[in-house]
Length: 290
Image (cartoon, rainbow, N blue to C red; front, side):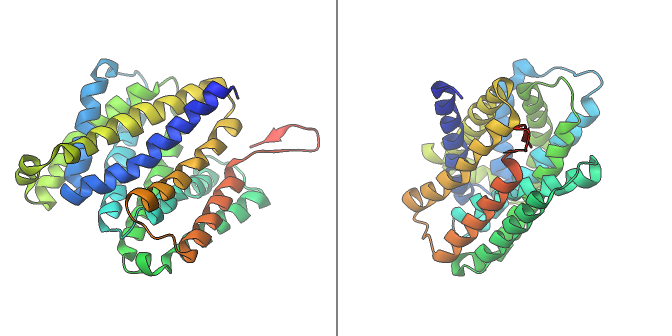
């Protein structure tokens, strides 16, 4: 990979990692459904030029909008609100990788080799270790919410594999169009004080959903989509393992998280398992296998 593209990969990882800080700050003031609706409202305004009907793909696009836009993001931000730290959320959210690998086995007919089986076991075992960290143990509901959000993202990933000829910004525009009103309705039904939260929000608090839309979706996903167009998946996806590492570092440095040995051990186990699933290895003929 060219040095300039490596810097782009670093920028994408940093943008995604800092999104955990922005999300935690946002749900500290806004309730999760409201925050997520605001995030997608900003994204929708920015991506309106990409919003057009996609013949033959609308069923799949709308399914992804429901699973990723409504379920995944609302569960992740609800987990951030309930959590006592950012690091555990950042690590547990990566469970979408082993979840999607297992789902692909049943829904797409893909196969699992011994390396991936070990990787899946290691990833889930790492999250179990994290669950016994005292800070996380007091907020197990947060860990469960984030794990459910990772499962929703895994299902959306399987749905995305079935799409053909759909650009990343067009897909995100449709997700935003569907998720914004759905999450606003959920906020009206299950949350209170929306107008007060909007009226009293500071500039930094209002910046949180804006950053989440611009930094995570436009910059992060846009860069990764660009890199996937230039390099094989086996080259690009392992670089994304830097995202939770940076998120943990940001949590410690900027949010005051305490990196205990259980969190460090569980995080290392989870990331090692995910690396085992995603990083391709050369076979005896020198051909890399996914």
